[in-house]
Length: 133
Image (cartoon, rainbow, N blue to C red; front, side, top):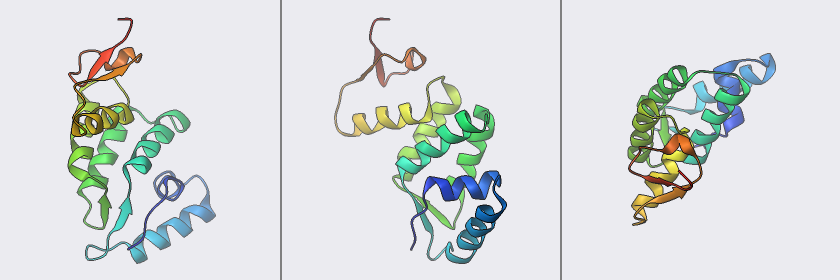
């Protein structure tokens, strides 16, 4: 099993550097199989969303679709996939960043009553208390 870093996934998806995209494609297609999937941590998933949104101006819908494909892929395994699915569903419905929902869900799993934040985009989600709102 291999772990995949954010930059490898970005090159594979965006293909903005021909040499690195080719290397990422060879690696993923040769080493990531249903019986031996490539591992994607929650940190990498959060970074991927951030890079695609901020660096490449992907919209929420495109990012959500991509995350759905990654989470559904047999040749990839996302760490704590059930939590990642929950965060994705909240991301599609809400306004906060994917990473915010991951944080809120992780805190809830750790028995936190609420996650306190200054991020007004998290308002209305039962995971967060927005300070100063």
